[in-house]
Every structure is written in structure tokens, then in C-alpha cells.
Image (cartoon, rainbow, N blue to C red; front, side, top):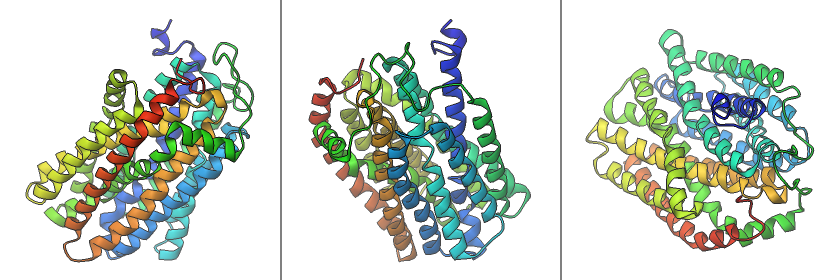
Length: 421
């Protein structure tokens, strides 16, 4: 029976995963399409690199701030409708971008796109905490993590198809249409499928989640578990995962003279490699039994790849691609550990959505701030060299802070507050 449902206990469990996967993967289609269109925007002089950095950061900051709100309300409201609203509004924002080249309007719509998409992730983890037992939640988290690389690949594929046939603005039209269709699939397919507000099913979590705690209790739980120390490493992994991906097409076009279509085709190789990140993270974590210590290993490896990129990246396109794939793969593994697995360990307290939103907010607010700095560096002399050194430095800082948090997290996992069964 388990094989018939792809490793899930029932058809309902599998369908819950399936529709959550569709929803989150589809949001990536309207998240990375701006990166795909960036070389054309600069080549045609629509926006400068500084303006592109501002627009990109608007998404990250609005997404991050939105996570703080959606995480809290996701523990209280109907998550199914929240997710639909986020998907639908994001799609409409992208359709609006098809109609304008005005910088201010572009900035507002892309920021609103980020705010809308912030309504999706935390409620999805809340659905998992209410509908699955601990073992199934673990599988759900790893399986759901494939939405990031495969959603990235889908975004680049749709964007590449649009760029091959039409001007750059059709990237936003086609991606918006895909997400709008996915939102209808979500709202139609999930009707009466799972619980979104009440206690978990009787055959799932033995103890129903408690009512969401107040801010003080949540803060104490984050502090005692060491999760507060992870905020800066989470910001850094977000930067190295999303900002690196954001600038890859531009780097290939600037350093090697690649066309936009060719640069985008090369960039599509990254998510194909990154699919393995979730399983690498889980395999290593099974040996170390500590998500934070596991993340340290990936931060160290990413720093090595960044150093190689700094020393030899401008000499070989292939080596640059390998190094960037290594960095994004490592950061995807850390993302799975910190943004998916860590929040699910708080299921007993009924704070999964709140904590997931808080941690994810840190990732995107940090990414937005550092992406602004990246834009400023690239507009100056020797910009790529300085940007690579910045990435190396922050990877080392993330390693040190994660090492400091690892003993606290190990103690938390051994306590009664952690859901590890």
C-alpha cells in the first residue's frame, strides 16, 4: 500500500503532499523570472544594474516582512485560502509587469509580488504539522524541498521559451499565466482534502498542537533551542542561494559575452544539480543527528567553491558554472535543514507556521539587503571580484555562528519540547 502512494500512508496523505508541491513550485515560476529577464533589461537599457538590484531587493524584503505576518496568521486562519490568495495575487502582479517599463511601477509590482508569495510557505508547513505524524512530516519536508530546484528549472524553462519567441516582457505574461492556472488547481483540488485550522487527524499527530503561544514564549523557545543564533546564517544562506542565482545570467553575459538565451540555458543546469541537495542534507544528518552541525559542513564546502570562483572563475566558463552549482547546491541543502526541517521540530508547541515564517523572513530580508550591496559593488570598478570576496566572508561568518548554535540545538532535540519521534 505504501508503494502505491509513493511512500505515504494513504491516498489522502499523498494528495496533500502533491497539491502542496504544485502550489510552492508554481510560486518559483513567478519568483525567478525576473532574474531570467535581467540580461535583456540591462542590454536594452531598460534599467541599470543598480535599479535592477533595487527591484530584486524589493521582492526579497517584502517577501521577508510578509513572512513575519503570514507565519503568525497561518497558525490562526484558513491556510488553504491564504495559499490561494498568495498565488493568485502573485500571478496578477506578473501579468501587470507585462504592461509596463516604468521603474517605479515595476518596483511596486515586484515588491507586491513578494508580499503575496509570503502567504504560501508557512501555511504549507502548518498543513504538514496538522495532517502528518513526525515520520511522515520528515518525508514531506524532504520531498517538498524539491520544489525549489524544480520550480527554479520550470521558471527558467518558461522564461527561455518566451525569450526565444518574443520580447522580454512576455516572460512575465507566460509565467503569470502558469501561476494563475496553478492557483486554480490548488483551490479546486484541495477542497475537503485536509484540515487547515483544527486539530490534527486522529491517525496523525498523537497530541494536538497547542494554541499559538505569545511572542515572549516563542522568543524564549527560539533562544533556548539556539534558533536565534541561526538568524544570520539563515540570512547568509538565503543570499548565497538566491542572490547567486539572481546574478548568474548577468555574470556569464558580462564576463564571457554570452547571449541572454545561452546564459539562461547554462543557468538551468544549476537547479538540475540542486535537486540532490535535499537528499545529501538528509543523508549527512542521519549520521550527525544535528541539523545545525550538518549545515556547518555545507557552509564550509560552499566557502571552498566561492574561493575557487574568486581565483579562477573569470578564466573558465565551465569552472565558473561548476563552482556556482556547488555553492547553490550546498545552500539548498542548508535551506532544507534550516527553513523546512528545523521548524517542523516545533510541531508539539503549535508554533510551526510562526517559527517557519520568522526564519524564512530572516532569509529574505537578509538577501534583500545584501542584494542591494551586490548591485552597488557591480556598478563600481572590479565589481565581480569584490562581490566574490563578500560572499566568501559571509560564508565564513555563517560557519562560525552555526558552530556556536550546534550544542544548543542538540540539547533542544533531546528535550521534551522537540518533536523528533
